[in-house]
Image 1 (tube, helix red, strand yellow):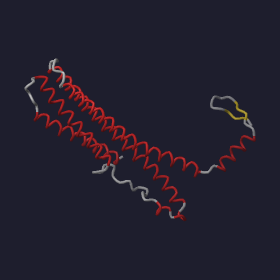
Image 2: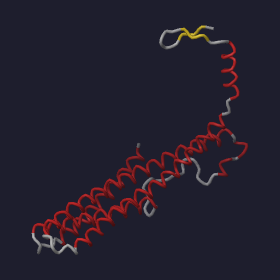
Image 3: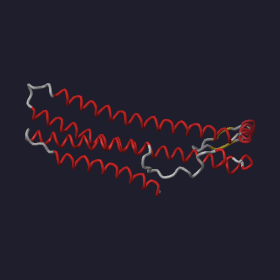
Image 4: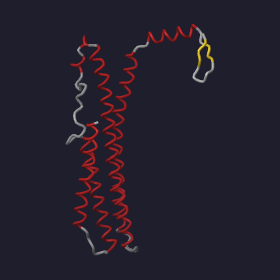
Length: 218
């Protein structure tokens, strides 16, 4: 049999090939595809949780490294303090920005988890609707459509985000204090630092809340 390809060329397909393809379509088991899809989604959910832990750990290690460097700088008595203060102001400012980026990564991972869980629920819904004789609905603790709100107070995701936001606010406060000391060694900007930590923490948590809230509305 002659068949035209998308390029206009002629492809010779034998009757045996056509019969083989038809037989493959008839014997294709959708359960195999659904099982593979379910396993892939389950692996994606596991990987999302692992990535979330790595992201938070990386930020904590980075912050700890800067604090260790700060403590070590107290031994450098032969250097002028104001350039050191300016350097630490810049470093802690960078850490504050990294905190925001870490929070955004946690947001993306949480949204990815919900997408994977929703895909898993679609497969559950398919089997519940097509195998009513097995009463599969009673076998699932997480029923389709039962994921709930993406923003949950006191969930693991919320507490990780709050932890990163507070540390980011503390980093900004440290940057403000060191910026004041760089300008004047006797200038301690405690009140601006206190306002900075509260505002930066609040801004990050509002971003976290709003992004999750708007993702539910889509």
